[in-house]
Image 1 (tube, rainbow, N blue to C red):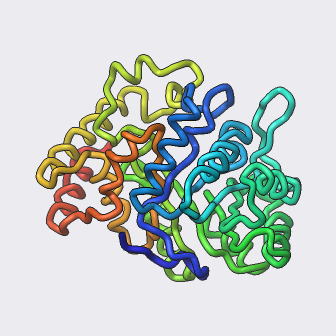
Image 2: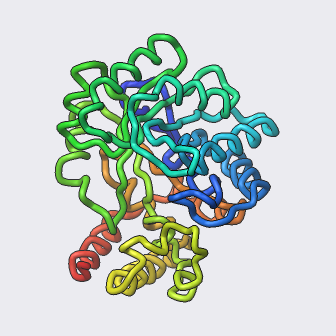
Length: 317
């Protein structure tokens, strides 16, 4: 499995990493519905056994639970993946999620405890909100790096102007934006800026939260549990839902030529962009991981990449 250097760091990461959002489980604001911890641990083990060498999580996923599950999984494997986590989303006693960049030091200590490690390989500001706290927050991030609590520091969901402001305080190793063929906003400014400034790009939601896996159906969407955030997501509502399922069907047709799924093609499309270092791919059980791990090695031939580009241009939402 190929590896690429992440920005200005010494981290050599595989093309896809294990995304630990869904394994946080239900009962919080941005949950994916109920999740069995044993399935989560099996999914992590399968990803590591198949060669994936990094896990991306966040304190807020499951309100701390995702990090705890990751730690449990790593206690029962000999693999030592890079651990990436995030800060800046906190919660109160009512389990309400809030944007707050003034508690980063406490958050870092809590994440270290939950992950049961002495150092976090990549620590990321989850969202640049409130905007007026960005500089102070990035200063704390730089201090944590100097103290050895984190090895490298990155951002997530930052605009170009916010990255420029942070860069005046300390170098940015990576940016984690959403990027898929259904969400291409970062192509115009953010990806070129990162590429020009040696900031690695870790794409999240390359299959757009399951829409492009090829396994999503209208019936499945209708039966999402109440605590699945996708019930309220615009791309899962009409008229976008029909268009998006049609895109997934088309990707499935492309994938069948190579014996891979629509989801693998969707991930390969993201990785085709030269600014993208790696893509975060979630898995809720070992079977799901097995279904998408081919994305770590499959590359779209240029003619088929252009075929997909033409299809997308002709089927604009």
